[in-house]
Structure formats: C-alpha cells, structure tokens
Amino acid sequence: MLPVTSMIPVEEARQRILAYFSRLDPERKPLLDALGQVLAEDVVAPFDIPPLDNTAMDGYAVRAADTAGASEAAPVQLRVIADLAAGYVLETPVGPGEAVRIMTGAPVPPGADAIVPFEETDEALRGINEAARKAGSVRILKAANPGANIRRRGEDVQAGSTVIQAGRVLRPSEIGVLASIGLTHVTVIRRPVVAILSTGDEITPPGEPLLPGRIYDANAYSVAALVRKYGGIPRILGIARDTVEDLTAKIREGLDADMLVTSAGVSRGDFDVVKDVLAREGNIDFWSVRMRPGKPLAFGAFTAPDGRKVPHLGLPGNPVSSMVSFELFGRPAIFTMLGRSDWERPTVRAISRDYVKNPDGRRFYARCIVTRGDDGRWYADLTGPQGSGMLTSMSAANALAVIPEDVPAASPGDEIECIMLDWEHAP
Ligand code: AMP
Ligand code: MG
Image 1 (cartoon, protein in one colour):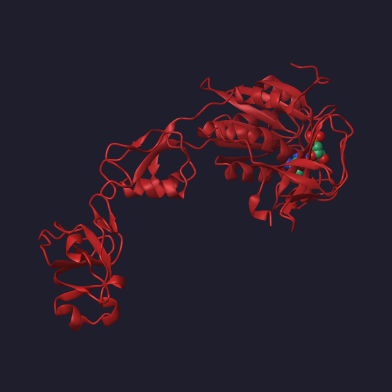
Image 2: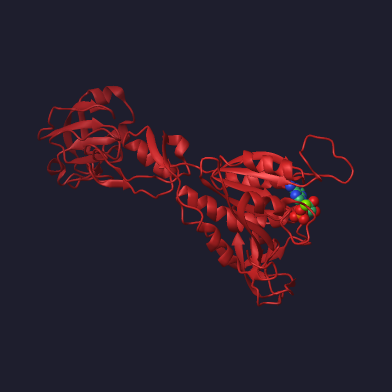
C-alpha cells in the first residue's frame, strides 16, 4: 500500500486501474440490441450490394446508342415494351428502338445500358397520363451516355469483402449495413455488469422518510446512470451501514459482477469501517490522487467464490467527487471491458471568463459551461460555487475545465482545456 501522504498523478492511477481490465467475452444477440456494442468478429459480405445493376432514377431503360442526337427539337421516339417496378426482374431484352419504363431500384433489363429520367422524356409533358403511356411510345428529349443513372452491381459492397471489421462500435449506420447483408443476429462484446454500493450510516434510499441528520443516496444513482450511459449494466446493491457485518455481506453480494463500485468511506481520517473491511475482504490500495475534486480513491480486487478477480473502484463520498472520479477512472474501465479504446473524451480550448484559483498543486477539474461566442470562439464559464458536495454545480455543467497541477490560477482571457461531457448542451 502507498503511504497516504504521497499523491499519485491522475494518469498513473488510471494506468494502474486499467491494468486490471480487459475485453469481456462475446455474445450473440439480435442486431438492434447490439447498438453501441463492439463487433467481436469481422463480418464478410455473402453477396454483392447491390446484387444486380439497377436504376438510380425513375425513367426509361434504353440502349444509349438509340438516343444519340436526341434533343427537345429533335426527340427520338422509342417503343415501350414493359413497365418495371422495383422488386421485379425482366428477362426480355430491350432491343433496338425499344425502351422499358422503370422505377428506382428495379434491375436494369438485359440490352439496356442507360436510364433516361422522366424529366428528359415527354412523359414529363404528358404528366402521368395512363392512356398516353399505354399507347406504347415515349419521346426521348436528351441523349443518354452509356451507364447513365445505373447503380452497378457490387458498387457498394463486394461479395467476400469485409463490410465491418471486428472492434468497430455499432452505430445506426453499421446496424443498417449488417441488415443490408441479411443478418438478424450479430456477435458483439458483452456489456459489463457493474455492482454499485453506497456506504454510510447517514445514507437513505430515495423513497424512504428522511430522518434528522440523514441524506438521500445520490451517488448510487448518478454512478448507475453513468454506467448505463457508458454502456454498462448497473446493478444497485443498496446501502451498507458502517458495520463490519453489513459491509462485508453487501460486498459479497456484488462479487458476481464484472466490477464493484463503492462510494464513501475512503477518505483520510474517516471514522467508518469501510477501509478496514475493503482491505480485509480484498486486495485494495488506498490512494491519494493529485486531483480536485476527488483526491481519495480506493482500488484493487476482490476474489469471488469461484476464484474470479473482481476489480473494485472505491469512490469518494462527496457527490461531485464521486462523479468526476467515475468519469476519469470508471469510464475507461467500462470502455476497456466493452472492447473500446476510445475512452478519451474530446476537448476544446476555451477562453475562461472567470478567475479560477488552483492553489494546492492538484489538477483541478472545474465544472463549467462551454459555449460558442458570436466571434466563433469557445468560452468557458464556471457553474458557480465548486464545492465537491454541490451536485447542482455538476448538473449545470457541460464540461470540466482542466487547470493543471502547476498552474496556480487561470484568469479571465486565459485559454483553458475543457473536457466536453455533453456536446448537446453546448449551444
Ligand atoms: P465520506 O467519503 O464517507 O467521508 O463522505 C463524504 C461526504 O459525502 C459526506 O458528506 C457524506 O455524507 C457524503 N456522501 C457519502 N455517500 C453519499 C451518497 N451515497 N450520496 C450522497 N452523499 C454521500
Ligand atoms: Mg462516510
């Protein structure tokens, strides 16, 4: 165990934590349910897409050579031999002087090598006049080049090619691509189950009356919401009283999860028994991380009855510290289990509008709102008082401004790096 007086940098804490996590096993599930998960194996196209040459426009399938020299002044008249809707195949070849009326997506009939859109025929002039159409001829008002408006077989995807590689996150477009090759199920890395335990005699579950001196359990819910948002499956274990028996029992309930997250009881000088029990039941280190909010952090592993190691993240109790610590350490852990390495969030360099003090040599993650000014530049405004117990400061924020360890203050006009938590609220 590290002496509590030595502080470790955020990166080192994260590195040590991530060493305990790896990609989970694959699971097979219905396509739509796999949204947001990571593809576990390459998917190879069993056929070409499109499977046949087909028309990109409503119009007439023609032999391009027949339309040579056509213009509005000197239209070329062709005999219409068929009407072809999408979903049907015409075997009859289009001969010289002939055309097939054809709808977008319908396979191009043999013999035809160009599609003349309605707009370049007299059909546009006639309107949708059934009688005229049935009369069996169409006038072409513009010469067509060979291949015009034809989508070629295999131009999107070729049979045998990898359409989506293992490791890709399935977004709506990937789900669509997989459906387009006929898949109903897909093999993806399963989602981690994260057990969440709040600790402390003062903590009361929402829904129960609040006795004097007690507070409601915010952490289990904010952390569970983050777990879900980042792709895990939260399992709230409830609240452990500060007794050896209760804490031990509740921790054991969480050992069938992929990860156990506790909150509170890890700070220095705590009276509660959390640290003792964590240290006794598992192989847990207590760290002091060079950050604010959220300096105290516990991390290690418990051993499940089946011998499996269950990583444990012990968050500080203050609600903002708990969320920020989960953001910095829990999110990368969940991403790693999901098979994702892209846990690093995008940042913007914004101009501070406030004076932000950072006197104690730690890295300050200040809650702020980042907006784009009329001049097109990004600006950061603190969301008011930054007490680590004030969860509303987090709720008002869309970003965390990072004031580095060696920067004692940021002044109005200074550029600061902001980790974007929520682009949707960056007006
Ligand atoms: P501790 O880490 O136990 O010293 O707790 C630090 C602060 O966080 C105390 O004011 C606790 O009451 C508060 N706290 C601990 N757990 C929770 C929780 N689950 N929800 C809201 N506040 C909490
Ligand atoms: Mg406590």
